[in-house]
Image (cartoon, rainbow, N blue to C red; front, top):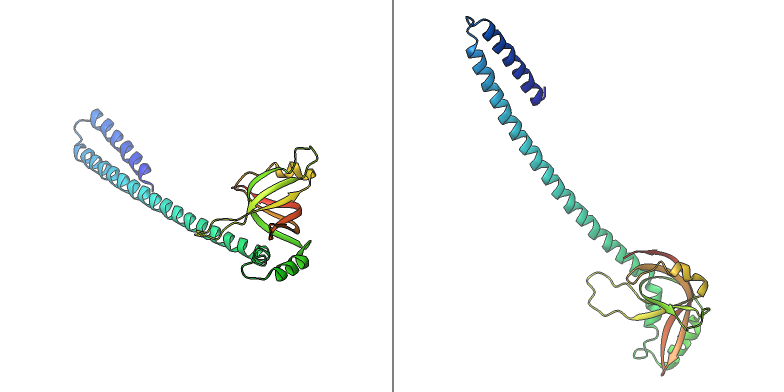
Amino acid sequence: MKLWKLECVLVIAAIFLCVRWLTNSEENLEPFLVLISFIVLLVGVWRRKSSSLENKESIEGTELSSNFSARSEKYSVEVESSNLSKINDVFEDVVAGLNVGKYTKLQVDNFVERNSGKKIELRIRVSNIEPMFKSIDSKLILIFTVPQPLHSSSLPNFYSAIFDRKYEKDLSALSAGDIATISGELGFSNLVGDYSVSIENAQLISFKKA
């Protein structure tokens, strides 16, 4: 029986005894009334103690749930960073292949010739989106960085992806800092003897708000 039900029964019994005592004062019902009052007091104390224990367990359960959620979120971020690294391995290899400090100019030229126009898919962090020129049919250029692994202290490098103007509506949903998956073709430009890589004929596959 729940404690509040027991209290109700005791109160009803006390009222019943009080009525009998008032109608027939010769009956010695005072000891029973004292006993019922004492039991009601004990039940009240026990109910408050039980309530405090339940609240403590609830608080501990909330803290445990919060800690578990925090660990789960951290694990999710770590896994996501790992996936980002894997899907971007090809692009990182391309960037590394343009290192004129490690390879000769001839090797880099041959590397660019072999890889120009190749299809690629990668995940990026959006930095900015703007038209290449002021004309209304100008293509759109998306400036991006490659998401860094957790606890990385290196400064990000900026790259560009060129989108046809017909994708303006899709790109307008992106904000700076969003993580997006795009596809396109590798393009290279030679500025002052150094090659830079970009993504041409790009398309937006999916994105996740920051």
